[in-house]
Image 1: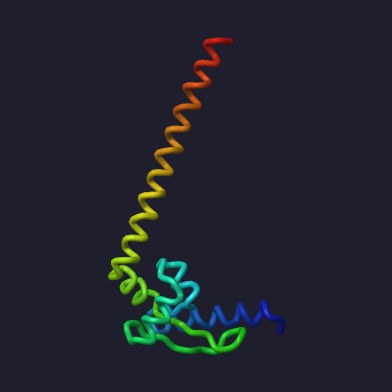
Image 2 (image 1 turned 135 degrees about the vertical axis):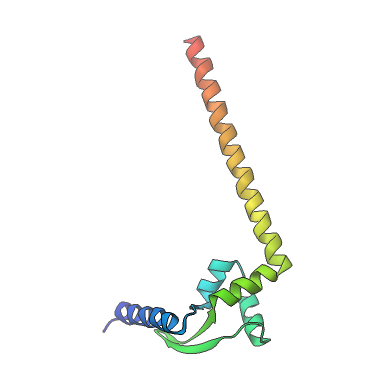
Length: 117
């Protein structure tokens, strides 16, 4: 059995366990990616009992898992993470407005070039 097969088996086992327990336990990496919380924050939260965690055998040794729903709720309660998310949304909105503006300018430029030519 190669590493890819072991990793696939492990991920399948995690999915089945989550379905059986009616909750989704994910790796710290996935929880951080899905919620915007840093791995350091996640470690702090489970060490201080703010979220549960557990160790399971992973493809590369012990792997820490946390319940995604509880991490998301804790992240949402964090003013710092909320501000970061709001800034990210504001940046994305501003970028979309700038894209729209560039599209309008390109249309105007094309119309001007067509009038000259």
